[in-house]
Image 1 (tube, rainbow, N blue to C red):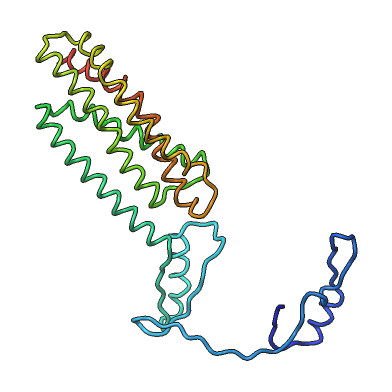
Image 2: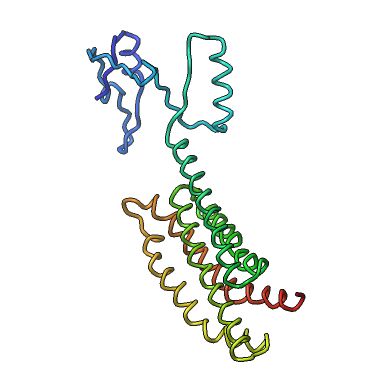
Length: 260
């Protein structure tokens, strides 16, 4: 039942002259579904730390948020007695994404210094860390392809994915270095032997994580909108990172040793 205050004859006429086609191919007047009446309700006031305010909800706006803010400020400039503030989920999400971006940058910097100390090189860590932007780019493309977006859950997935996949490259390079240092192998033999020794563990680590996330990717129940971006990011990132760790990073390391 829909209640409309201050009913008039015009409303009643519109309801009687407007018809709806039913599933039985019969035309029924709108007055059969809607009734008019008066209602009395409490007055609602919205107030915050700065006093009373009038909330305006924005729906189906095709422009950017910054453009909307600019237009709003221009309109309110004509009314100096009014002020405006903006809030909502999009602002909270942007703030969280900014914080996660800072965490990712700090983590990569710390990882670089640790790898530089471990491998006694300033260039080799860069070859290992080059895998992170490749995997993040692949995860971002997958989010776009599956109709998802970059949100808090997908950003968390990128941070977790970077930590998992970079470990594979570190172990692969470390095994190659140990084979050349302690067993006297040349570069070619060390790469082949290191690939054989680390292949199974690298593949199993990635595949177990991918299979564990597969139910989240195909789920359609409650919370799917939060779980699916996380699953897409991790699954695609690990699938792309697997050949990068096994082949691309060792190949770049070979080039580095050859021209250094």
